[in-house]
Amino acid sequence: MAGAAEILGRPHRVEGIVVRGSSAAASSASHGQRRDPAPHGDPGRRRLRRLADRRGERMPAAISVGTNPQFDGTERTVEAYAIDREGLDLYGLHVSVDFLAYVRGMLKFDTLDDLLQAMAADVKRCRELTEEYDRA
Image 1 (cartoon, rainbow, N blue to C red):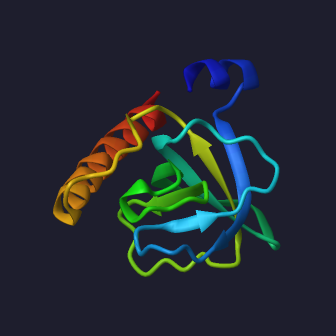
Image 2 (cartoon, one colour):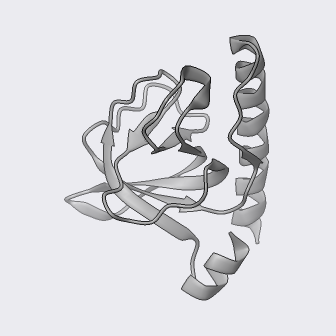
């Protein structure tokens, strides 16, 4: 992630329209022909863009890129969970997702409880990494 940011002069970014995914874990942003990073979780920022406000609101996010092996998924998606935001509805809106750091690889867990515990740890780590990035 750091190498891509150095070359680009900013974090790697994907953009798309938020669509409803097959799981309740996060929103999927369709990304068309854009290249996305290897499957893994990343901390990042989801930036909401409205037609009237091109600046957008930035939100810390835990990002997953992959096929969702826990639920035998086959379609590769980018899912961004807006950290510490309740009742947020971004469906149908254009967003951009910035990738800041690698957290862990895509895994299939033995139980749903194991998955939920790992997701909670990922969100905590992504919150910390995003705060560190913002302070730098």
